[in-house]
Image (cartoon, rainbow, N blue to C red; front, side, top):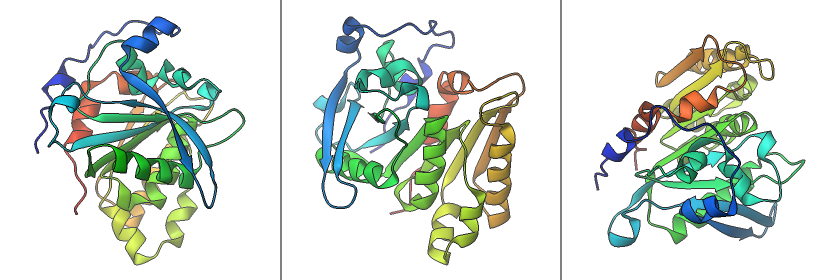
Length: 254
């Protein structure tokens, strides 16, 4: 199925300034709070919000693209609606529509993103909802950007494209791959973003990751460095309609 991305063009180019969410905002987001429970290795619960496109309920035959969004360290809490402070969930809270499912898990206080728990959450969502598993995307900011590098490269076969924003990756990981893992990463589309004046996670961290990927032989790699941005390189990125157009161009080979 070809899903129209015209509605992405409707994303405002001058969005309202960030404001704290309220109970009223929660009811207008069309993001439902859910809990996923996993067993076995790394058992536990993952609280998450899920957004379904407007047409999702009326088209029972459609399979939809999905974006897994990972928030930053500042949004770690016991309140799942706190993930609407930044990124695509914030835009949904402000009233914007997307032609894709958005899944936004919550990382509890003092914890970090766990690849296995995220994969199990993704498995559960793919079983419960009508997801086009060849068009699954991953993005995150700051701590979530680091989580995007980790999950996206270690399990590249699960994603069509990833976009880490001001995150920290591990170039040494790329030197330990077997041929199958290397091929999976080479087929992955990657677009990284970073502010040149970032005092929290230096831009050189992303530059080293991009260099290591190119050295590996990856050709589907883009890097945007904002010359005047500090750590907040996510607002300008997530507010750009071209960002979502880029994702929707790609699908993973079956």
